[in-house]
Image 1 (cartoon, rainbow, N blue to C red):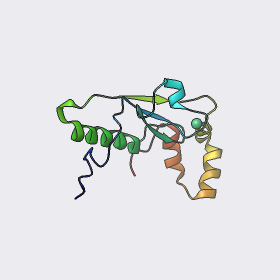
Image 2: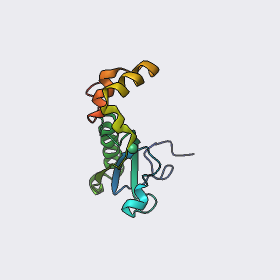
Image 3: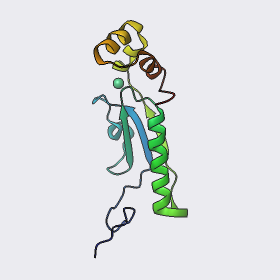
Image 4: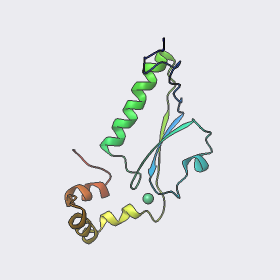
Length: 124
Ligand SMILES: [Zn+2]
């Protein structure tokens, strides 16, 4: 009989991250190369601009909870690294004219886009 416990290491070996990296979705940003980490050493959360949004904070909390559930008192702490890069396209969100054009063409809310340019949404 198989083990159906989703947290069982017998059926689902999970990585033991030493670091969670929050970075831009831009393919030029390679956290493994930048930090010199090996496969399985880092979890990477990507979004436009590498912004620490409410969703990102919830993802980090989720990883912490799963790690603690899996390892109990032996859970090793992990660090969170935020990596931004030069010439990031998310910088355009600071331009009200760009936001207005984007909002008109996609139906996105201008205020939400403005909040994104400042680092994240305050509510969903
Ligand atoms: Zn970027």
